[in-house]
Image (cartoon, rainbow, N blue to C red; front, side):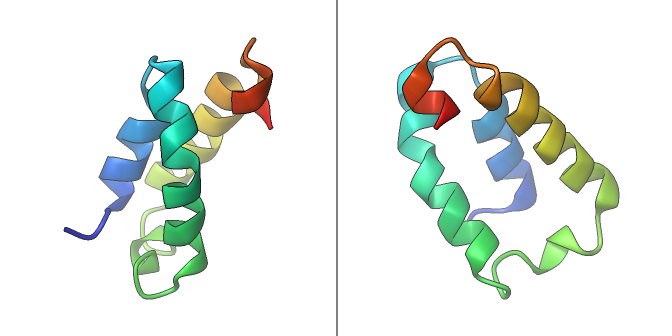
Amino acid sequence: MEPSMEYCLAQVLQKDVGKRLQVGQELIDYFSDKQKSADLEHDQTMLDKMVDGLSTSWVNSSNYKVSL
């Protein structure tokens, strides 16, 4: 199953640090493929939530590996 924007957002917002570390490459692959991430341009609200989730949950994480 191809990841969707909803799936990616759920992965970004989860609390389990181990799972967040595992999903990082999956998110990069999703955002890099224009066919997979075509819904990014159509749903600005979901994109805003994604960026907000990454900035608050990942960048400000106390785990340096997640922050990177």
